[in-house]
Image (cartoon, rainbow, N blue to C red):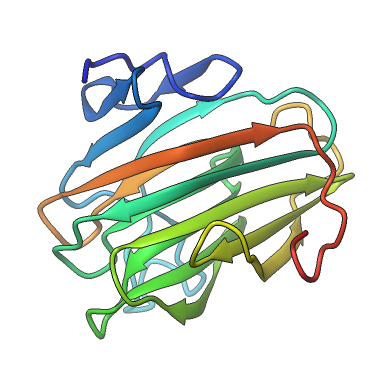
Length: 208
């Protein structure tokens, strides 16, 4: 596996925020990230003195600009969870105050969990469900001007987690991967079975 931060299984160019973090194995189409310690993407909705999670925009990202129109972007994600909020993420990024992340994250109760965060000036954080084991499939879909998050335990049957909007101008919206370790000393995240298609999602509620 070589350090190739501008390569990925996505069919468009990508750029790494932290080039030394990312590895890509062309033979298996696998992306691996070593999340740096104490890194995250989060804007505390209560402000700097709210006593909740610290506002940070430091997580390692690997992002590119998809073609216009509808798409479905998915991956199987595994994480060697070590500390609270360690996560592997499918990331949708407009700018530093407008983005959405779809996370496989280590919860405060030390359980792997599906979590979504949508940020429009501040972050709207929502927990979905816990997972037995350290693997999950996540998918980000664009349908016209809306985005949908779906999760799956087997890569076949999908559960709707969230539908949201990040503004009408989609031209600068990038997608890709993120790895974080907000409270810990780092973790390793693996993204495989990566898929990107321009197929329109047919049924939003059941994910087909």
